Length: 145
Length: 335
Image (cartoon, rainbow over all chains, first blue to last red; front, side):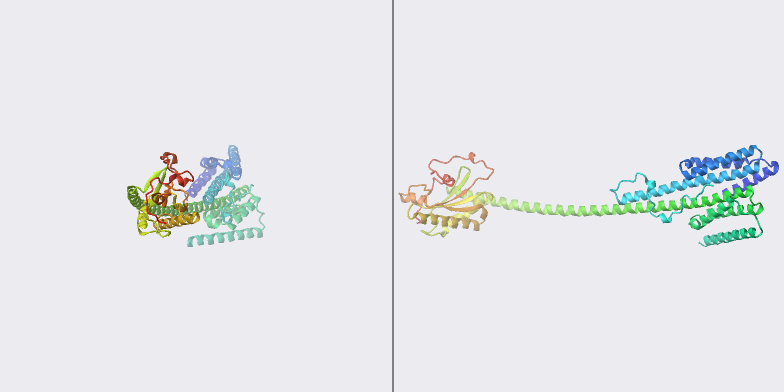
């Protein structure tokens, strides 16, 4: 709810700036997009292939937005900022999802070790099959565009 | 629950509206959607067909709102950068909704695994507790059995002590009557006198009284081997003497066994006239030779050599000869 309110405020700010100058880039919009990229980097999106792809897209789009802003094309810059923010948010979410799935696999591995104490621990728990795979939604539904 | 169903209904109504809008646009001759818009529609459809609707209705709704915005941009200015950009974002929103649902499902799985683990730990703990209780019960039973055994041993020791004291008294009685000696580690009990009627093998009453004392004394040596040896004087047929001495030794052995001496420890041996301890030329000598000796062999751990050597009066021969009494009493002729 708060995020939605912020987005609305930012949109109003952008509209106001565009109306005044027509080529201005919203500072808060730019800051939000940069923050989203940084947040994705901090959770480790670089280490997860699909997330890494979207993080790179976000960086490219951010760079494109900054270049367009320099060219005083604020309208298109804002469109690229929106794209950058969407890709960064997706990269962050994909990383979190992978981390939670890893934790779930490790938790099931512990259960298996408890049930079979003589079994050697799995050196690569991430490769452990999901005990209930049919219930898991596709963890990587994204398609690069 | 009702709220969720209402939201689901709204989402479906919106989807229907979106489809209708596309059809209207097509009918009006609107331009074809951009690849970005096609992708956004596709991603949203995929999100709707999975479990996202149940796991992440809010995310799916946001994806739907983004798709609506893209559709409006398409209607307003088909093929514009604004349409492509909003469609691109709508596609990302749909993917985001799916990823959020996957995270929620992973969290549920993690919780389920942790609950299973906890339950497994509790089961293991209960099993161990039950096993410990079983061991404790077994230990208690073993301790009880041990205690009973110790009590039985104590009772046995007490009885054994009583028997030994009794045997010691009997032994002293025998020593007083000069019937008991120790020679070369062996105890030799010499029974002479009227043990049997002449020519008979049945023990006389006085003999039974004396053997009662002997039997009590022998209880002090439960682990020793005992040999009952019968002897006769030199009168009469050799074979008959040998048979008679064996039968008399048997009678004494049987009496001792009946009075508590372990059967496996005692054996009898008839030697006839072969081992005299006195001259057979005199009545006194013959009386001494007509006798029964009870030999208690030394314990296996007792060094035989520590005992005093025999007197030279003993005739040479078999082992039993070495313990023949040199103090046989004169007894009236029994044969």
